[in-house]
Image 1 (cartoon, rainbow, N blue to C red):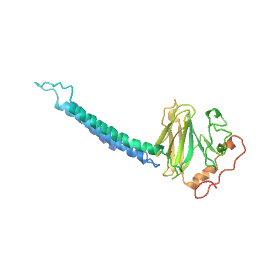
Image 2: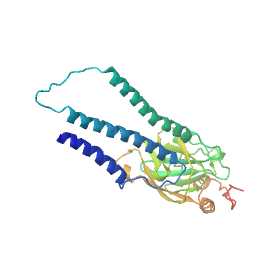
Image 3: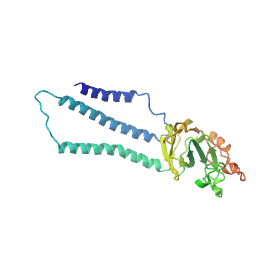
Image 4: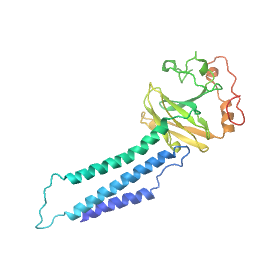
Length: 280
């Protein structure tokens, strides 16, 4: 009897803690509310199964407790019970996987109007690259990485000469505009994660991974590395600042291009129209 009560108390306390917990999501700041919906579906399914299993265990402990004169029945197989458990498990797993597959398809299907932004990770800092007035990012090669070329751009690629380089600084993004985030790492596994964006992806050395998002509100948000990348992993933090179009383009015009940083002939910085529709 005491064991059955303890099991029931564990189930009830877990549910109460879930609803009264002070630890919850940060307010969302992107279009990925689908991530929240998928997590909520998973919580409901796993929560119901958890309570049902614990409740069944408590029932069995109480119903089949030891009593004088009663003998246990040995029943190694029960085809009906096993069939129902198999069907129920399959339905539960499918209900959790289906929303995730739908969201994943949306997660990797980038809108055509999205602007490319590159994120470079290394122990223990973040660097960024944005397209210049031509709207295109130049090519890169890990062999080109040096103190003067921290992102490894190909100096012979004309598309990269006007690329905006943010080496260890803050990333600025315009609100309401879709962005394709290209992810690179030059040493170990990292993971670019802004909790308010609900979007993240592993960064694998030698590969370029990606995701996309549309910032939905202005503000300053912290960047975290969501992959254990070394002893100073917890200190690998950065900042993303989401701004209105005018403020964003004013900031963009103040940044230095790859040509300027590498000592090549400077390229005139893009002048952006007040309506935020791009360079003129």
